Structures are given as structure tokens and as C-alpha cells.
Image (cartoon, rainbow, N blue to C red; front, side, top):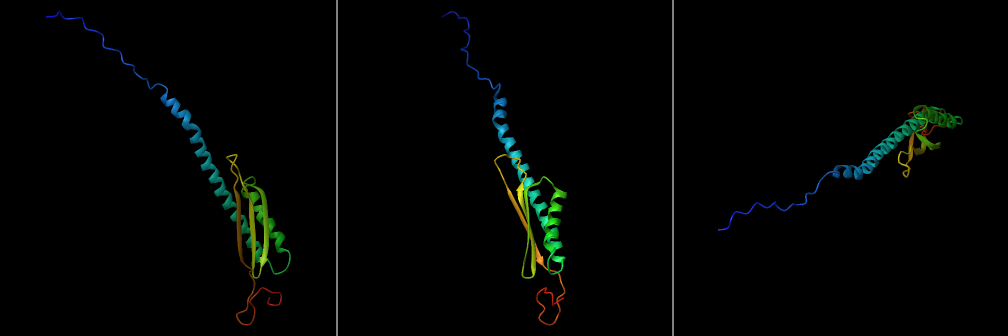
Length: 152
């Protein structure tokens, strides 16, 4: 029989360490998370800009629709819409354009511009229009189908 040999040290295994893996994951994910957060804020700003443009267009159209047939309503409607945008969010719409028009028995106001940019390479154009019939007296009988000077 063989004498009992001293115990040999077990072969050393190479143990991989996970130290630093978490830091590396965060370093890779942080830019993506920041971009996602900026995208959420960007779309919130576009959504808000659309609502402001719609509110201003509705306010301008309300003025346009209630003015009597003839001149003078156009400048008042545009001024009201521009004033509302400046009052609610003066820096919210860049390149603000307000247009007003009349077609048959309707008047309309359109407010457009570019929403605030949060992400540098993304530009969103916002445009909202409100229209409605001109408010005037229309008789129940006869040919009074349009707001004409003679029909009033």
C-alpha cells in the first residue's frame, strides 16, 4: 500500500468578477434614457402648442363670425388670435402666422407656427384652423340664405 500522500492544492480556477458590469450598463443606457425623456417632453410641447393654436384660432374666429358683413373684421380677428397666442405662450410658437378668410357664409382663422424645439434635430409645424358661419339675421321666409347687406 501506498502511504497517504499529502493533499495537493486543487487547481485554481479563474473566477470572473462582475465588478464594473453595472457601471458599464448604465454608461450604455443613459444616452438612450435621456433621448426617450427628451422625446416625451418634445411631444408634450407639440401637443400643448397645438392646443394653444386651436384656442387662439377659435377666439379669432369668434370675433370674425360676430362682426357684421363688410370690412373691418379681418384685422380684429387676426389681432385677437395673435394676442391670445402672445398671452398664453409668448415663446411657444416660433414664426407665428395668422391668416383669416371668408368663403360664402363662413369665416375662418388659421394659426400656424413651429413648436418649441427640445431635441435639436426635430422641428414640428403646428397649424390649427377654426371656421364657422357668419352670425346674422336670416329670415324664416324668403330668399335670405346669405348674410347680405340687403338681408339685414
